[in-house]
Amino acid sequence: MKEIQLQPRLKNASHFRNFWEKGNGKQLIDFSGAQVNFNDFEKFSQFYYHTDSAGDEVVKDIYFTRSFKKASEEIEQYIRKGVSVDDDVPESVKALFLQTQKIPDWLDYQLINKGAELCMRSNLDSLISLRDYCLIGGYDYAYLNKPLIATEALKKGAVKRLSETLDFWVNVTRYNALEIHKKGYEFAIKTRLIHSYARLSIKKHYKAWDTEKWGEPINSWDMMATYIGFSLVFMHSLKKLGNTIALEEEKGLFHLWKYVGYLLGIPEQLLPDDKKQATEYFYLWTSVQPSSDEDSVLLAHSLLNESLENPILKYNFQRKNLRYLHICCTWFLLGEEVCERLKIPDVPFKSGFPVTKKFLNFIYNNLVSRKAQIEKGNKDQMKVLEDYLKISQHSNFH
Image (cartoon, rainbow, N blue to C red; front, side):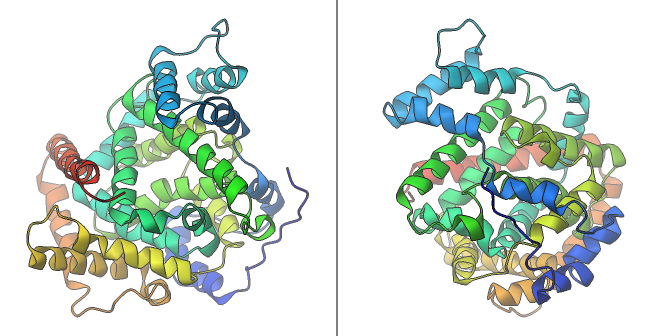
């Protein structure tokens, strides 16, 4: 670990104070009962220079010594069959798989399924939340985006990036998906190794990387923030859109992402158990992140314009309308200050769609049985994923 003394360098910056004193941060504090302060800053900030060395070693031993295709096939075999202490495999592979195959004492599969039910039951609101709050909101943190810029994610296009995120999210949030050797478990391991591959490539080829400012590429603290995006921020978004969330579902959502984080090699002390902890952890992390820069604006616009590029909808007017609806949701969920920083276009009647959605969700949540909501949500989400994967595979997006 690097000996760099990190400070909560932006705690007096206007974007930080506005977020926590009157923006979404203030809402998160009210919603979670968090007590935010800098008492634990040093305990967490050291992870800005900490990375998943177990994942990195596997990439060096497997991915860097054979073709990407061969390496991926080999890893898939380990995922499906499992790895035991006596297997004749590289030590790095043994270390990684013995960790991920070890079920932590705190794990409760039933509780994970409750979290999965919330993700499915919230249907397209889940996808709106991921896209228009979690993803675009994440772009407002300038340093968090640096690995995306270093790996030239903008050139690959938002359609591909979105379909990859969706593929991962859907597959880890289905019933029993995270049991060893199942689909969600497989996605977690593969994602972990993609992170390591990207990190090692950045360190090797991207000479302009500023470790002191930006932390290590894809460091453990940034990973924590990303997974708080999938739990706390995601749930806050569902609430804003008028969804009711049962206490068991809320606990389940945090439990699900705690376990995904564990599989991804995020140190356990960074994985929050509930919304109070998550808000307190998130507060500390945001104090080192400056707000949007030019790269942030480019990433946000690339995502907004994805609706226009994406051939899922046949006609241009449909695509323009979809873009308009996403813009409305982004303003509604992220608020004025963030949207202005990211240069999100100001559109007429922007609160119309989200407010109507909120009202309809209230009726839907009260009239339709929970079981029917889960079934319909799962079906609709799988359909969206299928459409995205088709486009991703059969088009020029690369």
